[in-house]
Image 1 (cartoon, rainbow, N blue to C red):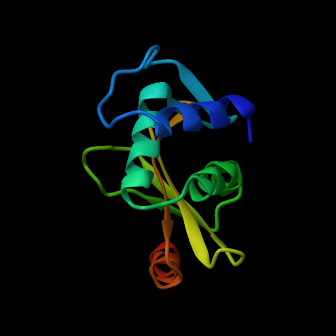
Image 2: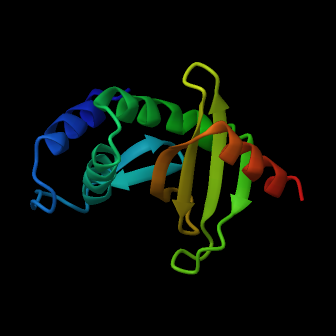
Length: 133
């Protein structure tokens, strides 16, 4: 993991929810095709901590995101009208017995990460069935 990303996660995990950050629009590349802004990365950290994910799980999600984006096992158009042209990518990881899901937005070469989270195996299996239709 990029040491800058790790330092951002450390910084944001110590902040209060809703606390203002400097350079909120600064882009943080996760891989050559996807990025967070500082604001969206802070929101990601806050939401994962609120969902009771540990920092290690947050690091795991960030570590796996490039592989999920570049070699997804599922690739489904997102029907959410809030984010037109977005899509859901995912890969299952046996070491944690969970899938890592990435939802990407925008129609540019580098897409914004809308969401990055875990799914359990049964939910991932359902998504695989949707993807195969």
